[in-house]
Length: 198
Image (cartoon, rainbow, N blue to C red; front, side, top):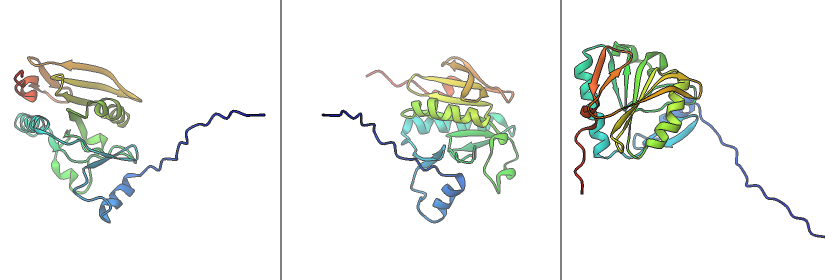
């Protein structure tokens, strides 16, 4: 007599890290400054390479925020933020409650953060489906994805468990307001000039 067995794929247990363990890995040299990674939900995730389009969009945003906000917020440029016990992402930009001296001895936490911005080229899927729910769960009030491929800015607001309730898309020619501040900037100034057709 023959028996048929259905073999299910083995699912190994996943070990997740705390922020404390992640910091310890950096302190002892397991992770170095050359390792471009961030901690998301206990997993060490490689960060996408940054090309010229990405870098220039970040630079344009940082300049616009720095010149336009005039002390209303601090610009946190490509540095870590402490969200949850198992998550320490490094967004492209964040706007923080001033003064800067309040962050001398700690990383910014959700209560300090007015806005988080990710510039998406190759990272669009991760920014939408991994980071948006994480930022919402942490209570970040507003989250932008600068979508370079589609030349638009996706603005997520009203955080709740599992994601944001509202997503609004802004196109070149429109003004993009920062909900937490009396400030706006032109979408075209973030995206720069459209690449010439080949």
